[in-house]
Length: 308
Image: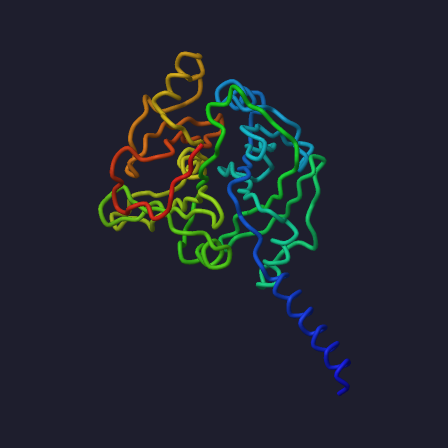
């Protein structure tokens, strides 16, 4: 082959390889975008998220029937009308911020994961698409828009983790850990030798996903049937606090404790102060200290915790 033709062929081949490698590269997953939940009482839910949580109410670019309650420019709770046939379920999807929605869609497609034909675009400049994880939970990847949001009354401005019901840790790990690169953070259980919670951080930040593991029925035959209340405890989100006791005082003195909630803050088994509140349909909001004040049970933290 003529040297010039050979050189040209090599350049073309190199460009093709480079393009393939670029297409298969995973964009960064920087943290939590939002949790989308259902409401059976929009007025009560609106009061909860605005007056108690202190979030800012915004239109929903993704769904004209929905509402966003933002705690910052890039994190919010999306509230959707309760669909027919939802039963006890009040969780629609979880969502993660990425630097490129289209790049993430191409990455998952290249890995053989079922993805939509393209990304969706919002009036706020955001981009997103939705897939299902191995257990059928809907998961979104969101490239945030440029809209600036301030939420001065929010009880906190950083959603540090979300959690939902998981039956098989091994199955979910094939998606979140192997494919997406989530990293171990902490695990624990209510009783010695049991595993109830497994946490893994996003690959490019410190926010995390908590598997809320459901055990098989007890040998005694005790009922383990889920109720809307028990499922709402599992399907939850957490707002980070420098001091949960201080945040509790803000809620208390501001007469913002009208919802169902714990009696007082306490230190969890992970060594962090926490305080739980529940929206009108039972979705749990866990206020949690950014940092532990006691040694955690079960497992040490294996990565740095999020901060303000």
